[in-house]
Image (cartoon, rainbow, N blue to C red; front, top):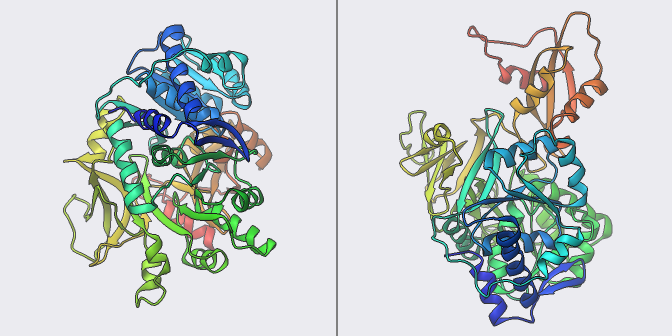
Length: 509
């Protein structure tokens, strides 16, 4: 089954329904949305020799053309590689090279970044801007009436998520995985309706984009803010006028939205549902959010390897204020979603009893096919169909999962994963840096910030600006350290391993 069939079906049944909007402006109804996707797919095959199963990347900021591209890729049977527009050009180029992408769609604001990394860009890969006349002509061409038939296990979405090795890993999501994730959305998160306005204030390349499918199937509106990103005042203004707004956001986005609503004396009128996840939501923050904006919230817990689908804390459990364990439930990430099973295991992979803390594992039809060309990572992460998440938590007798820590050193800042080794490797290429260890430090606005603990070479001087500039030359801006701490030596154990726990304790003093 090709996931693009959902668009084709909605276009037949609700051709005049509004589909794509930029702010309040209508860009396409469903008939036009499907026709453009079909034309893009046909042009990819005809003019660029893209074949079913080939990979096509999208490295662009949020816009309605982004969704047209994705469906065009799927329409002709290829696989999409949505790339975070915040990434450095070299990082995007590496992803394209690793995936063997034959073409990359860009936007004008990402083109320069990719061109700066031209030495790393695959020579055979074509590049096409969504803002160009060539793209506009492509989507107005002739297409096929129906998407190419695909099997449920055929690759649809290749999602690159950084690994602890410092190199991104390509998570292979099939058409079946996307259908399973959408089924979970409709059952466990929020019942989509044709009246909905799905607002893409978070990147389409990530969780917000993965939530497009149920709204496409139900014939709802897809709205990209004019800013292309998240501005809390813009979101509040849009919601009040569009009504039935549904949006996904990281906890830091929720906090900023609540602050804006308080400042304006509003409660988020027009927003039906805010789905939050991608990082820890502190109990005090969600309680304040409910107090200011009312019961509009649903929490999800997932990973790229099981996208948005491991557990959910439903709207019902946000509203049960009279339940004797309400605050405990509110501090959890909910229960297993409908196509998933969740368990807790010890360090040897043996299941643990209720109430004991260990590694969170998940199994079900939403779990990825595996990592792209990475059998070692597959063997480490997938065991008898169980996904080893690397997160630590416990299950209570009713199946509620509470996360207590992460076994991996991933830093989650503003809902985005940042892996310390990427930062460390960038800084270690600077001549003045002898040793470095990057850690996450709690921050009230971002959840965590990156702090680089640096040991300088003899004679080198402390210079934050110089290290910042060096980082920006090789990694994305949002990954660079927010703070530098200079030490005479890094704490290490007898085997020479840096003791990050001690570093974190030092930062708390």
